[in-house]
View (cartoon, rainbow, N blue to C red):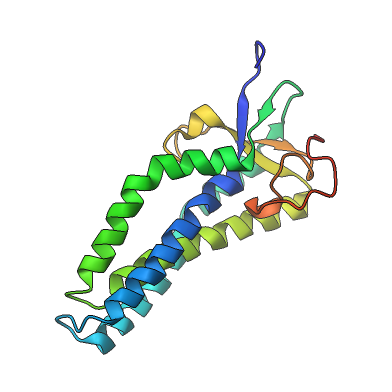
Length: 195
């Protein structure tokens, strides 16, 4: 990158990246947990898990939405010199940053089944569902405004695209980069580098 240039990562990709890694291990942990009688019994465990799933999904979806909206409304147009980080690079960076936390969360969810069967796994799956829903919400904003939201990579080293370190978003045209609105992989039918 030249002088004055910097890398941008898609906001929706950062949000969406951990969703699958929470959802699928959560489903697996809940399935394993359902095989264990536990202290409370399966019925109570599954009911508690269903409640935790809903609460986790709603909380994760709702948290910081006002901050996302403020940053999106104040976003400026990205300059020609910026480097748009590929979706795969962003996803890989998030995977590296979270891998040990995700492993510990999975083990904790399985272990908790000996007390409350399936509840820990359903909680984990709820966190993933909430992140996925938030990425879709961001995608709706991007489609409605015909713009994609980006954030400087050095501002999200801890994976918080609406955290205190983030002071601004930048926008590009809807076909920039290799991820569509909401952070899903784009089917390449148009030039991916258009600003």
